[in-house]
Length: 301
Ligand code: AMP
Image 1: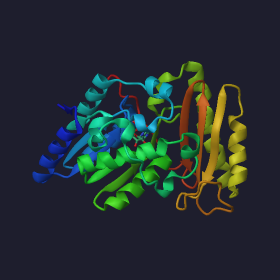
Image 2: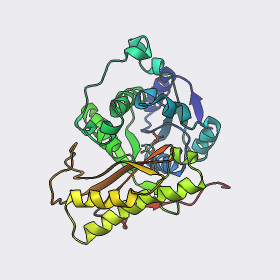
Image 3: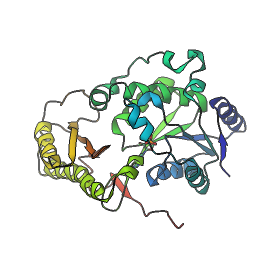
Image 4: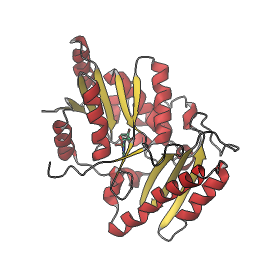
């Protein structure tokens, strides 16, 4: 059975005991409402570590809208059953105050010193979001003291940020796992639960736009502005409101569109479908080869 602990203090103690017993600890931070994307991270952690734990914490610091926070799906019982099935030994949560006890209350949590990956895109469209991620990930890492921590490529900018956080802590290996997609290509996300059938169909425009950019890239187009325009055009349909279409050099993150031609490219999109904000991205060099994974649904297993 997956043990469920309600405070970071208990989780810290549990993890310390595991390490004392000589176990390497794999860690998967999540906000719950688990799907096959999360499951792939946990499975990998279980395969690569002596013991694995996950956090389930809808972090208020990374929501820039109260409504979005309130509407975020929550399904603790189902989440624990999934974690149990894949061999996760412990899951924990906590209140914001329990993660930052020194602050006294949540409004007094000191601001982080922003790392370079915080620049642009998600940071520009969701003020405070990346700082909120940085604050909680640093705290989660200190709580668990993992050997390896597993994140999804689906949140590409976040994965860069997390690598930068871990680099400053020296002892944690960050493992970034491929995006798991539904059979139609839509990147799995807890937010997909809020899409109705018509919106799900519409949401496929995101992955189509990314694939079109990859097609143009393979055809020799290396100018990020042209690729961004191409994607923007494909998302210009009723029912979709685009926050950004972007191409970045993944090894040299910039807030703004870099000057072309690029040697390496990562295409990224963020768009609203109905009232749901979705993000996705693709490695332009490897798109169509190994940058995404489609997994069978696990219902009925
Ligand atoms: P979240 O619960 O949305 O904060 O996500 C927890 C972790 O799961 C993050 O590292 C995400 O990048 C990762 N993740 C979310 N969706 C997917 C997906 N479709 N495929 C792989 N990883 C994912």
